[in-house]
Amino acid sequence: RKLAERLVRCEVAVEGKGVFKEEFVTAGGVALKGVDMKRMESKAVTGLFFAGELLDVDGITGGYNLQSAWSTGTAAGRAVAERAVEAVAASD
Image (cartoon, rainbow, N blue to C red):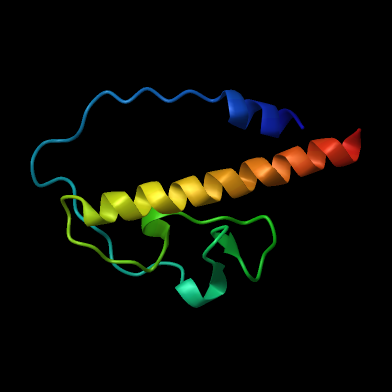
């Protein structure tokens, strides 16, 4: 419960980006066939979520990889929050 509360209250400050040519996409990662793409949750390990460049998705730098990170991060974050709410409700 404390972990869920900390995650919900977590604030991250963005202070800018790196210098030119520091932002590159990675290759490889967790195979998509092992991930529930709606929730970004591992099919093998319940409660393990993936997003962004942890996944085996390659994209050209300059937007595609960022959009993938934002979209998968949003899906994973919503699924984690839903799981936390369920856990809190079950403990009451």
